[in-house]
Image (cartoon, rainbow, N blue to C red; front, side, top):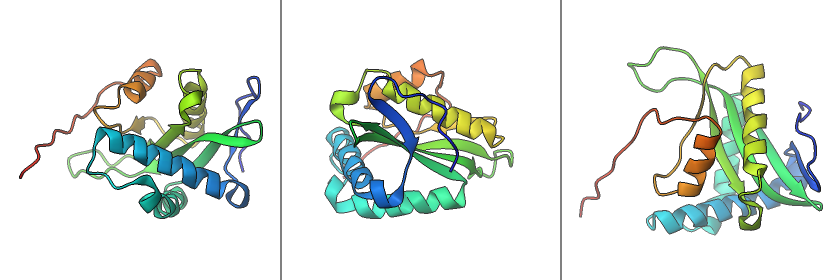
Amino acid sequence: MTAVRSASAGKTLIRDFEPARDREAVIACVAGLQDYERSLDPELPPGERVARRYVDAMLQRCRAYQGRVLVAEQDDAVVGFLCVLARVPEQQVDEQSRPHAMVGELYLAPEQRSQGLGRRLLDEAEAFARDRGAKRLRVQVLAGNGIARSLYAAAGFHERLIELEKRLT
């Protein structure tokens, strides 16, 4: 495991995910993330229905794309996590064949938001990606997730591609 560069700020520590220790807490975080996103898009399934499979798929993507999962821990409890993939290949035929890094997931418990912890997780993801040769770091976010969009904009992300959707009934 790579050492985490971020120092503990107060009682909050950012560290590498340890499967035996953190799996259930990260599953609960994924359920929370899914339920929050479901409040923005009601067609998404409930968190508890998909969280275990989602974590398995996230860890599989980490193995495939040189990823890392970080947890935010406060008073010995996981209060959030971030997954970053360092070497993601381009999916579009018209894109140059150069891998990029991707923040796959970022979640903080509601009481942990707007305190700088999300930015600390993003800074660590950026350093991880840069250390592995990535020249670009991407993230996807639901259009209606204003809190996350503000965090990403403040961290230096800019809109690159906007996907539109029309529901057909």
